Length: 159
Image (cartoon, rainbow, N blue to C red; front, side, top):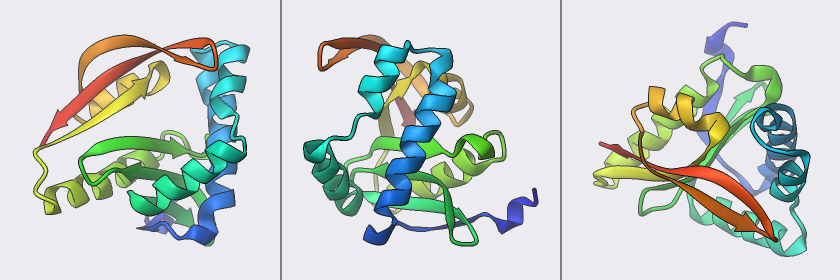
């Protein structure tokens, strides 16, 4: 695939359904290497309450999508305070610099806001790619979602 065909653009509310589907499929296909089926089911559950929360945060946060033609192949969003909330790439577009391109746009936005660091809670699966982008682990933690425990990492990148 020619990487020049990947476009990064701001998120639009009309992207929402494609973004949710991409998130769920990516976690189910990729994160299953490091998390149990029960954890994956809980992680990817987007009920009506979470649906509204996702819509709201994607619109309020600084959010970009990566596209090829009109198909969304990745997305990333960050709060105005520098918390990288999500960065997911379609399972068929892994290792093609999609995450890198999305993160560079997020980093550019953070710098333009005058932020000095970006923080995130990173999955086991995303830890090594995040480290390649300059993030450092602050600490490992266990979080609970609907009674199911997950290990992830609090990470930060100094800008």
